[in-house]
Amino acid sequence: MRGLCLLLAMLCSPGVSAFCFEAAGAKYRIDPLLLKAMAQQESGLEASAINLNRDRKSGKVTSTDYGVMQINSRHLPGLKKQGVIRDAQELLKKPCLNVQVGAWILARHLKTCDVSWHCLGSYNAGFAEKNAAIREAYANQVYARYKKLLRAERGIAL
Image (cartoon, rainbow, N blue to C red; front, side, top):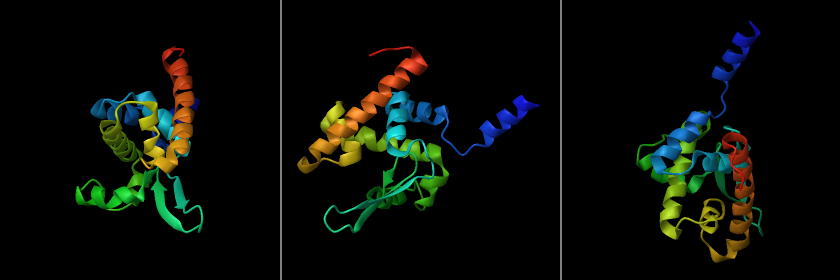
């Protein structure tokens, strides 16, 4: 009985399953564990996470990040136009969709600035030169999480 309860709890959990990362990774040719490491860094794997980004000087809200991959609101108009989403709530209620969108954004970045940790940092900090230190810090944090996941899930030590 206890096993059945655990199984039901896992099936009904609103969290992000490994399948979401596997599917997005396969579609965009990105290691699913790298996507998972990014999601850990972005939201702690919290599907309903919302973050308000503020201007450093004025404190004014400049954009909002949604869901497990923290999809920035500047992407919403394009996602709506393409028919991917109707509104931002879908990015919160559909964690696999959120991971797919995050993988798509990362794949676009990697095409722009090549496959590197520096480029991966642009997922979080964009391409502006003034954000170089933020990009590097983000990439280092994701890399540390990625190494832990590789060891834990694949037995690979880097």
